Image (tube, rainbow, N blue to C red; front, top):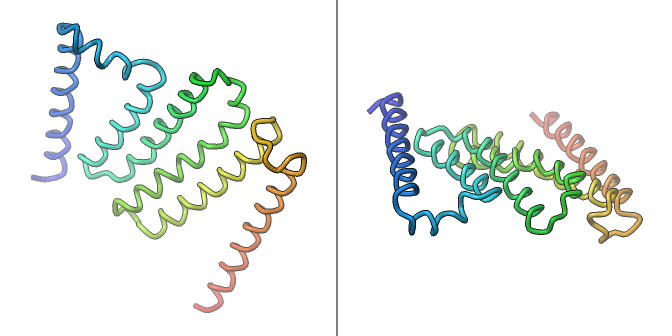
Amino acid sequence: MNKQGRSQLALGVILILLGAWFLLDKSVPAFHEIFDQYTKWPVNMLLIGGGIFIFGLVLGQPGMSVPAAIVAGLGGIFYYQEATENYASWSYMWALIPGFVGVGTVLAGILGENTAQNIKHGLNLMVISAVLFLVFSSFFGGWTLLGNFGPAILLILLGVWVLGSGLYRSFRNKGQ
C-alpha cells in the first residue's frame, strides 16, 4: 500500500473510532460517566496531543511529534495552573514552549527524521527553554532556589554555554 493509501486508511479508522466514541458517549450513560473526566479542560489537551502524536505515527510522519508535544505541553501547563490555581505562573511558564518544540524535535529525530540534526537541535532548544524558564521564574518569584542571585547566575551559565558551544563548533570546523 502506498503512502496516500495508508493515510486514507488511517484517517478512515480514526474517523470511525471518533464516531463510535461520540455515539457511545451520547447513548450509554455509564460510558459517559467513566470518560467524562478525560474530556474536561485541560486534560483534553493532553489527550489531543497524544492523538496528534499517534496520528503522525500511523501516517509515518515523525514531524507530527512537534505539534503534538506543543499541544500536550500546553495542556500540562494549563493542568498545573488549574490544579494549583496559580494562573500568575504564565508570566514565566511560556518559556517552556521552546522546550516543548525541542521535545517534539528530538522525538522526530528518534523516529527517523534527520536523526542527528533533529536530536542536536531539540536538545539545544530544551536547554535554552530550561534556562529561560529558570531565569523568568526567578525574576517573577516562582522559583527561589538560588535566592536573589538566581537570575545573574543563570544568565552567566547561559553565556558560558553559548560561548562554549561556539568555540567547540569553530574548533570542530577547523579539523575538517
